[in-house]
Image 1 (spheres, rainbow, N blue to C red):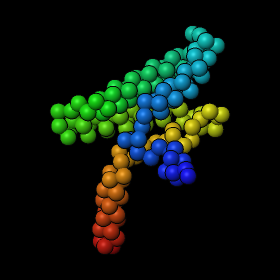
Image 2 (image 1 turned 135 degrees about the vertical axis):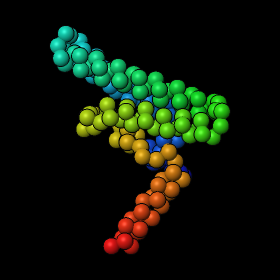
Image 3 (image 1 turned 120 degrees about the vertical axis):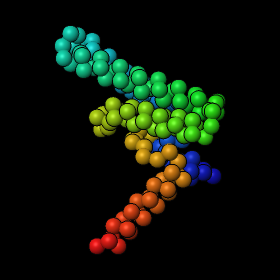
Image 4 (image 1 turned 90 degrees about the vertical axis):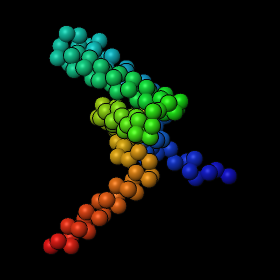
Length: 142
C-alpha cells in the first residue's frame, strides 16, 4: 500500500528543501540562459541572461552551502542554526524568483518550485497565531 504522504511531493517548508531541488532549478535554467547568451552575444539580452545566471549561481551556491551545513549540523548554537535555515530560505526564494517566469513551460516542477514562507510546520503555526492575534486586536479596537 502506498503511503499518502509519499505521494505529496509538494515543497511546503524550508526544512524540506533538498540538494536535488537546487540542482533541478539550476539544470532547468542553465540551458535557457546559455541559449540567450549564445544567441545574443554583446546585446542587452546577453547582458540580462549573464546577470540572471550570475544571480542564480550565487543563490544556488548559497543554498548548497547551507544545506551542507545543516546536514552536518555544525552550528555554534541554536541562533546560528536558525540563521542558516533563514539564509537557506532566502536563497531558495531567490532561485524561485528566477525560475518562476517559466512556470507554464514543460519541465517546470509546480509541486517543488514554490515560494516558501515558513521554515517548518511550527513556524507556520507561530506566524499564523501572531497574525490571528493581531487581527483580533485590530477588530477589538474598532
